[in-house]
Amino acid sequence: MDPRRENDIEQLRRIAITQKVQIDQLLRVLTSKCKEHEALKGSKGELQQTIGLLNEVTRKALAAEEAETKPEAEPRPEERKARAKFGKTPQPRLTKEEATFELDEPDKTCPSCGGELAPMEGQFETSEMVDVVEVSYRLLSVKQQKYVCRCGGCVETAPGPERALPGSRYSLAFAIKVAIDKYLDHLPLSRQVRILDRHGVEVTSQTLWDLVNAVATRLQSHYDALFAHLMRQPVIGLDQTSWKRLEAKGSKPWQMWCLTTPDTVYHRICDDKSAGTFKSLVGAYNGVIVCDALKTHEAGARDGPGIVLAGCWAHVYRKFAEAEPNHSEAGLALGWIRELYDIDERAEGDLDRLTELRRSESTRVLEKMKTWLWSQATLKTLSIGKAAAYTIANWERLTRFVENARVPLDNNATERGIRGPVVGRKNHYGSKSRRGTEVAAILYSLIETAKLHAVNPAHYLTEAVRAASVGETIMPWQLG
Image (cartoon, rainbow, N blue to C red):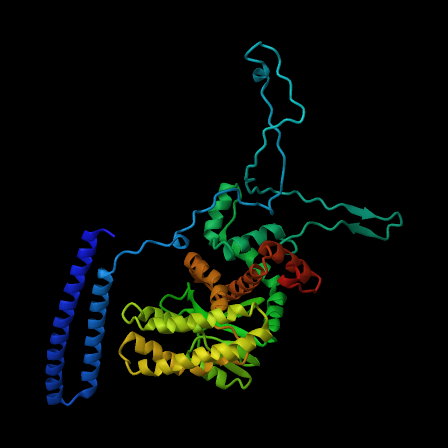
């Protein structure tokens, strides 16, 4: 190390020690004055809180000074950021075509002798290129051949193409594309009208809405089957977000409720997020519901005798993460929560192994954390105290996972399931009518579930409409 740098560090240490002594002296004087002042007022609670805040400020000041006196450490080789790898991204789902390019006739002359250039058999310079084939629309003149028997007793007509609805001027593929563009790619119908106009298609947003409505109507049976499947599962996640009423200015927004299982995403848009709505939606459910700690959920669950509520550790983590910048001891809670996740990962999806790990190792982590939480919960006006109080108040629900391996540590899967509608809401803002909310719920549910199983949503909606046409249902996991 450079001797001059070493001397500078030593000098900073001496300055820090001197400042610490001065701060301690000032703190003792200030504490004494506070005690005298509070003795006159007779308020002990405020005194303790003031002293606690002073101690916290002092601790931070000393920590900052100590950090300044530490020499900068050289990063270890393994800590250095790895270089990004460049190369061709595989495209296994693209259709492969081959195109051969030849010289133009004038270029087939040798520049050296003027002779004719002949192709070298089997010799090419090869490469790959990702190309685009622009979407195109056509007006198809449909002619369905008629057939007659010589006896004159029978006339048959060949079946026509798949339409959005019987007699509709638009194909099923056209209607599915409109639905996908809105509910998967978040394109409002008015924007689709402008895009279609550039392709030569003259259409109104009302016509596009009629097509989307027709698709949703034909998929109602699949939407109902999805809900029935979800209600049979032992554990579900529940969350909600607002959904704007576009035709009622100033009125309260609707609420989009999202229910999930590992293989299902289900949406329903209701008037509110009250206990009554909770009961009407899942009151008949028997099992564990992982959800936020809302009073309406608690009230609704009390009326559902088969419902057990479980908490979300991700919410707890966020509260302590928000407190950590001002209270470094919040890092203890964050570390314990990360331990819970690490323990779960070690089970590698084996439920029996997960049960064993949770009952042995997770329980020990929870015991340490609970003791510490009680020491922090008294600081009710501080962010760390609020985080601790929230955790203690929901402790029973947060620890459901210990005895039930099917209960996840958090409700993140449901939050991911609701992400698509939230992005869509930013683009087309909400729904104009009650039927608009129903159509949105049907299509978002089926599209998000298809995504969960890595099934092309457009392909799934097409197959589902075909199945519904013959009175059958097909779920996304049957195509995955």
